[in-house]
View 1 (cartoon, rainbow, N blue to C red):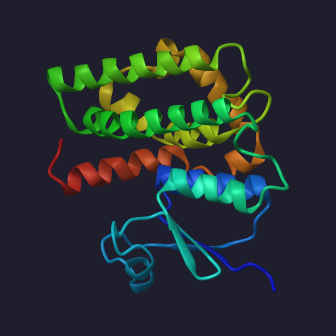
View 2: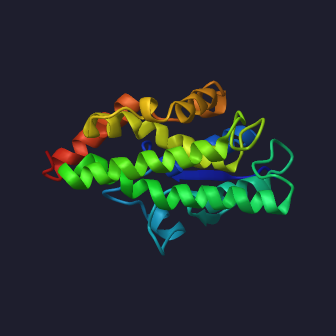
Length: 219
């Protein structure tokens, strides 16, 4: 009996994009269910009753929530193709650390850059750039955070690229000027089909951010 795999998601979700890339990398066929986040479906509320958020991976009727947990579940459930985590326990721990670091650091900074002005925005911009430079140091001379191929950290980070245009335009700065090695890494990721076909269009994301700002009375 074939696996039944459903991904409950929203098109502009950075966290959902992570899961889309992982499923594509593994060659897993799945049903994509777009959620209306203003009117959440009964299925979403049933599958994620605690947080009531996307993404949710439903595998043979069993839900897995939280994007980083989903990535590791995908890696363990379909281990035959392109492992996302290294075999060495210490390297696995390091990959989990950097994926978690990025998750905790960047979402709030991006929101502040797009929704605040003045000193608060400048502080958020500086923190973002400093954090990206730290990641550049971790990347070093490797083509990817996973070494010669995509790994957990690459999948965790690259979807945020789709919001860079919004950050740069709202914050009036250039991430490529500040962090050229990071953007070079992003471009290498985009050369991979599983990445390029799974990410949202940055221009469309920027339009969505402007829509949200207007809807919330933010100039």
